[in-house]
Length: 200
Image (cartoon, rainbow, N blue to C red):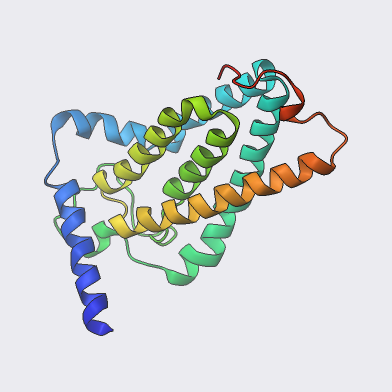
């Protein structure tokens, strides 16, 4: 078992270096810190939620509610139940030559799992349920977010993989919960309307 763990850890380091060093270039150095920043995404999220509530009709309101509840539950629970107890060191705390592009220091929550990967993957699952015709967009955003966390040097590949897997399970769970509530709620349901393929 120790041999297996050692091998997996070696693969993790190799993949991290392959992305953090091997793919390093001026364009990514400029774009990825912005793409991975919650500060940059926060107004995008707010605008997206406003559009869902304003233009999305019943489907948009259910989608917005599901997303907000997901973030309110998953982000703190991941930190409390996983990140803090596991307390995994981030790459820049372990590898002296790790390229840390966003200036994060090692006094925050642990590295595993990546909440960015978890939240964005769960959001992709939820948005796929409500707006399947835009699945390519939701998956692309989640994948690029996961990649960016490794590229900027703040997560191991296994952190984003673990976060993405948790996001898949959690996102599907949120969809199941939303459908359960919809079936028992007096409020209109998304499938009550003739618009089967709403504009996103």
